[in-house]
Amino acid sequence: MFQSIWEDVKSQFRSGNMVTRIILVNLAFFVGILLLKLILSLAVDQSFPSTSYEKFVAPYLELSSSFFKTITRPWVLFTHMFMHYGLFHFVFNMLFLYWFGRIVGDMIGDRKILPIYLLSGLASAALLIFVAALNSSFSIGTSAIGASGAVFGITIAAAATAPDYYMRLIFLGDVRLKYIALAAIIMQLAALATNSNAGGTFGHIGGLIMGYVFIVQLRKGNDLSIPVNRILDKIKNFFTKDERRKPTVAYRNPKLKKQQRQARTNPKGNSVSDLSHEQKLDAILDKIKSKGMESLSEEEKEFLLNASKER
Image (tube, rainbow, N blue to C red; front, side, top):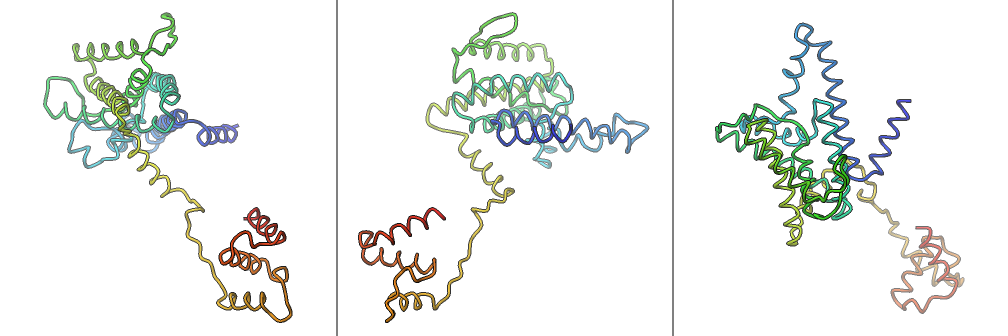
């Protein structure tokens, strides 16, 4: 059963769209953290099982609100946007990503979803760290996790791209995306006014801003996804074995050309058909180069056509 599930997951990751892949990565993080917490609680710190994960792992995966701590662990700028501790937090974010990510993919292309997700997550982290550095009265907290900032970026990108697109909501019926986006903005402002989870709220606002900026720039002809995808492609190519990218070395017999010339002009009158396959091909190509395609016989044209199919 587990083998079958694993094969289905791999198939979905290979053939699914970018929204599906991002959800699967978030799911892998969620399940992996649960298993890691269980292992650490059993094997590392029996007396204080709840502190094992927080002590040995969390500081290296969560986004710290301290700029100096974050700069020493720059990878947390990316890992934090794939992490969730609560089931509700995870399900809520993934549902929003699925709903609005599909709209973004249909409207502006699947290749732009991951760049929006990553850029919105980074903008979320940057705004949170910036506000924390101001020593404001907001209760920022010491660390942050979750895909909320990135998902809010996807949400506002969908609304900015297709503001009059209808989405059916439970108990409310059909609602246009622009009003859903407006409601999200009002909710964040209300959370700031009450100083409720200010760190998460600033993260959401950072994601909202980046999602909107992405679409505005795209309309101006500035596609912010291009440099991001270029970097991602380089990373993918570095870790992926692509046989087509491997250099090939051809070994030629230095006497081959001489043999071909002799075969074509030998006193026995041997024709091209008497040569080996490679010799025939080289002889025909030489003839095309010197006399043109129209100089070939029907037999030579047929041989060249068959050779091209084989390659």
